[in-house]
Length: 161
Image 1 (cartoon, one colour):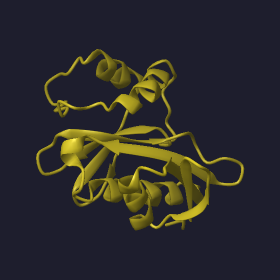
Image 2 (cartoon, one colour; image 1 turned 120 degrees about the vertical axis):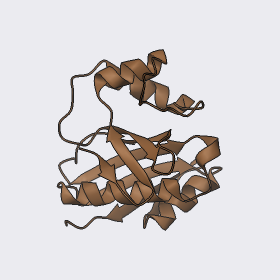
Image 3 (cartoon, one colour; image 1 turned 90 degrees about the vertical axis):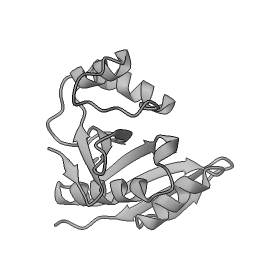
Image 4 (cartoon, one colour; image 1 turned 30 degrees about the horizontal axis):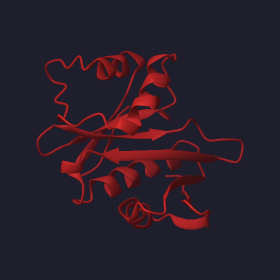
């Protein structure tokens, strides 16, 4: 099940597609940006490639820009909601796609999906140095819940739709 918004489409990644991305086995219709995947997606992609398919929707997604069809980043839930209804997530865009609000749009769309599928709260974190990611999370309605010397943690209540 894809997650869509005005300017982006988020396509769920299957284990077989994760293996192809890792192998750089691009096929007609894939339209991967030359900088995709990001280095920090490689570990999660390897984990997904080695796992069974997940039908819950709380998985990794490829972020595709609707204007040109290019895959410009990724979004990932770290699993389904926990016993308290909380989901954790991460995201990233290739440098050429940053600064246009696409990451905020992807986070907002994914959190609508999460709320509609049983999550009541969302969490994410970013480094203190990553002010761009902090702005994305704040624009998507998350608030700082705590911080350490290196990391800021964010949370937001979700509503069912």
